[in-house]
Image (tube, rainbow over all chains, first blue to last red; front, side, top):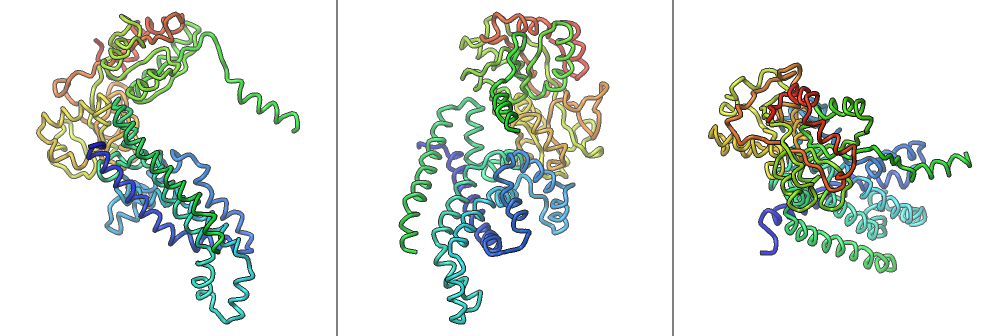
Length: 226
Length: 248
């Protein structure tokens, strides 16, 4: 076999992590992006800046404070323990929570751009036709913003696949639980298993290229339809 | 302001280059002693040390690919030997500067007893170890647990640090209740400084022989050669011993 079982396990884990993170962020990011796109509040600037923070902050900073917050002495850790969930570091769901923070701007910003591009006009027309705001959102905004959702989803997924520093900080490198592909490659390199590292890295490279190729070739066609 | 910006931009490229600077890669477990030894060395010889701390395996990869390190203070004896074999380390320069001691440690002052019985009793969810594939202290931890016959029961509880420093950080933060780390990381005034710990008897695992090696890039550098001598000297030995290492 081209890849070892451990490598395949790491790849599957990575896909699961990125997939779940993307789904959660679709749910959380859509209202956030909608608010940012439509609001005239003076909080728009500060909130937008907070949303963009993970773009700038080193993953080590994010990982370190997530570890402290989710550990048994942290606020989040005490909450999850009180709920009987245990603590999140070194668990798959801990990685999901971290990835949701880490990839948040990659979901929100393309969506926000897509919502802003729609402008007021279609919404006003829908309102004159007596569509309720919720009705408008699902029947007018969502179809118009489809390319935005596509690129936001792909970017979020791809960015989570590429995550490394945060996972290293809070993952604990457990096979099948937190040892994602990027960490597995790092392990191979450190153990001087360069051939294994090359193989897995090659798979990641092809995967990333295909994802981005899809993103950049699909995008214009979608826009024409819209 | 208009003048300030070009100055700032220029300063980005003007990284300090100085003839007497020695670039040293240091295994994470030796961070504490090296930080004590460095100023003594700098004061006595006038050379300056640029220290990088991390996992020995990572340093190997970096050195093999042209990293500008002049000395590797390793956590094992295999990596220096391999570097010498591949002509990246100077033949005959490697020697053992310290023999590491393993400790089972917890930030909780009551968790770990003086005999390591807690490993059999359980009552914890995570046991941190350094990656045994790459870190000698991780490998020694596995040998210790095998000897105690607890490997199979404890294996599901393992969380792995990338190096021994990250392993300690997992335990310090409380995210893992206890872990196998280097005695040098928790020693204070000749004993375990805080929390609770069990100093693993040396007979429970292969000796953790830590070697230092002069690298090809440091061959004719007076500063690098001076440090190779200094680490064997009495002043360095006193510091190394005070951090709980055995001397060869």
